[in-house]
Length: 526
Image 1 (cartoon, rainbow, N blue to C red):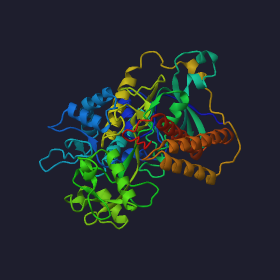
Image 2: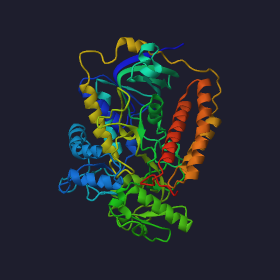
Image 3: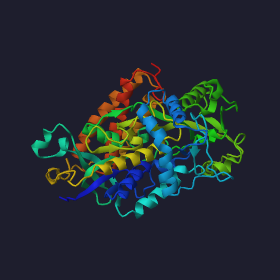
Image 4: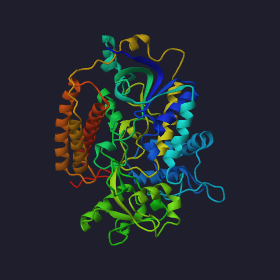
């Protein structure tokens, strides 16, 4: 049997903005970091897709004003400590890390000051951007710094299978009696070598992103299957707010594997949502009209579609946004591919799953309820978003918690080893539970089809008790089936992703069933 073991000080699972910010902060302190990437490029995740921008500040702004906007969007069920932490720390971290250290070229006005835009839920313009490809620009500069840092080792084509803990994996009996469950790294599947590696670490950071692929229509990349939530759930870490799944109101209405996002910044610059007759409708639903929070806009669009029987509504930027193609070149290019000239025509749009407001429960340092296991970015639940995320806070949360977690973990290293040699030696290498070569792509695709359709139809924008009950029963049965299949079949990336995705879908559904209060992104009809 092939055995491959590695040991590092910090293992970061996920290479988006949150993972890279954590890795850079630790590496700058002289710590050895292994950074895992599921694909072949660090820019393959959701962070690179972020269009609108990142929350900063302006002369008219203040931490208290930003706090109030976030609380209003989150329906005041946010964790106030997290909101205040971001509002006070955020601007300085953006300046120190992204502007001064990495040199991200945020757009300037003619007078040399930053061009700040406004999006839904914001009371003033405070959002930095790089045209309509802010996430890609940030990631491009982050990746360059990561790849040349001598203390960071990037491991591509790696998919985490399970986090290692003393309670679940240690072979020596004494560790089962310890009250504290300690995280010791992860089993990691190497898709190039087709082996499961044992990567031991003093500290482990989950940064795998969102859950979008469990829904039929999503703006997320293929990597976003909820793996961090599934792994944390299995090792006993707490999760919270998983029922609050945000659907972005404006994704491009066009058949594609991934829904192309039409940034909220287009409405921030003046774009208006109109129906098939060309009538603006958002003022009927909210006094903030097109700049109402996303949950309100999404439900308004669905109501319009139900009334009209049309397949989509339209975002009219041609008549309301000056030089729209120059301001949003990426969107202009994508729309042109399907024959839409955004300078002359309205853009057909529909809602799609976009962001998980919940995740693995963490504090302001990214600590979970399992010792030495941390989580940052979308896979975590800091409490910042409450029941609905405010636009352009996601990238800021990634860098703020990445820097905070990295700084805190770095401060915990002392003269003594964090994890003893004895404990490391008690962790066995992966042993395949079964050798039946019965992996069938058709069966895997069918299971994914079941998950996606179930989540979209029953745990989607509008939820009812009967729909949630049906989803719970179907996903429970599928989870049992996949557990049996998992025990009989050698691992592969498709099997790992399916297993994690099904568990994540089950967790979302369970959370939605338990919360009978309709609020924000969790909209229950009954």
